[in-house]
Length: 128
Length: 166
Image 1 (cartoon, rainbow over the protein chains, first blue to last red):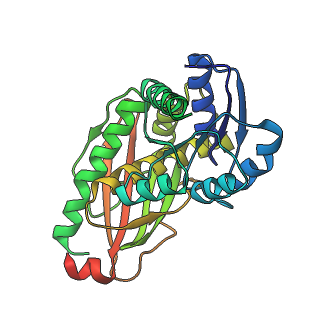
Image 2: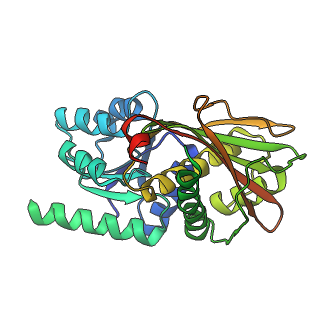
């Protein structure tokens, strides 16, 4: 796993951002940026240029699905992992069609998050 | 929502609570029998409510007394937070969000949309801000922890085609 990547964490819950930050730091990631909703994340995309995005679905202002659509339409190619309680099959399909690369269902352990990140980065690398 | 439908909701919520505590809080909880009335909570408490819409209208509220909230949030976040602080309320809201999302994924055949958490601190337990309408039923799922008790309050009303199919 390339831990030099710039990672953006998008979640309206500060608690969840802190928990994910701690997990990512323990995995070795150093360059992290946080956003509290989709709107905030869009405003930070240009300056931060994330290489991996972990995004919640259910957020005020601009939700995760809308963020993914808008980020992709602006040319953002970073792999996006949805980290969310939404696990219904139709919603997963909707998210993947919108441009999501992978999925982590809350609640999750650090091991599960690490496995999904590794899997996602490997798939993206293989497809490149 | 009829009695049979209500009872179908109990197991998904109990499983969701147990899974959340096992996965992210590294703790076990003791589920107690579902009740029709709110167990007495005299202590200060935190209420984190998630609004439901779609095939089911109503809400899910996590009600934790001060000791239980402190224990759960400390285990969840990995550090103590002052009771009633913004960070503590945010953590309680996220716990309610994960309980609700986990339970809904276990309720097959229903399309339910969940809202963002609304969290309040109160001296005594009040009622949920989302009624779910006159046909909604109330259920209370109490859980025991080392230091205290918490309750998951369900206000649920199945509507439209989902109600006819139930």
